[in-house]
Length: 181
Image 1 (cartoon, rainbow, N blue to C red):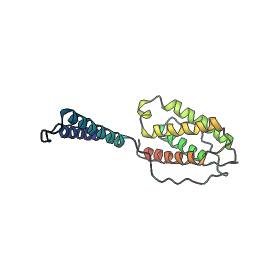
Image 2 (cartoon, helix red, strand yellow):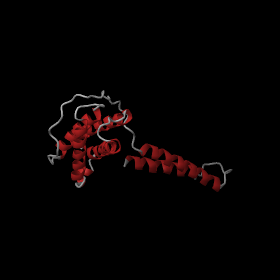
Image 3 (cartoon, one colour):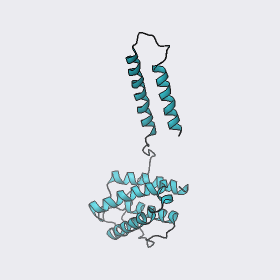
Image 4 (cartoon, helix red, strand yellow):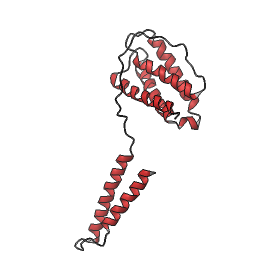
């Protein structure tokens, strides 16, 4: 809303400047129109850059990969969104941390993929939940991790660049869930 108002105000200023009667009459009307379109294009480009979503630039701690961990027994959904989202996020966090040769890594990956599919299949049907920032970010993370499992299998750890991106998303999910969003 504020961005739209600023955009309209900037376009108005550009139009007034281009067609102002206080301009010297040495310019032709065609030149004034050209200047108007040039100024308007600059305003539109600036507004587009401002309105684009910014990449999360917060420094996120990327933990070392692990091979020893406690295998969770609480797989599956409780059908309470906040609890399920937090649990899926925690399980995904652990899956992202697992290194090559981790105990029961393949079993963990298979359980993780089933839980992710169940979560998305159930909760995307509800518009109030599907519109939450925590859900959309978790959905993106699920696609990244599920894509890794589909392409590389369950025995291979995630590459460092993908891990870093996922940890940033996990941080955003935790913040959104904490705010109830």
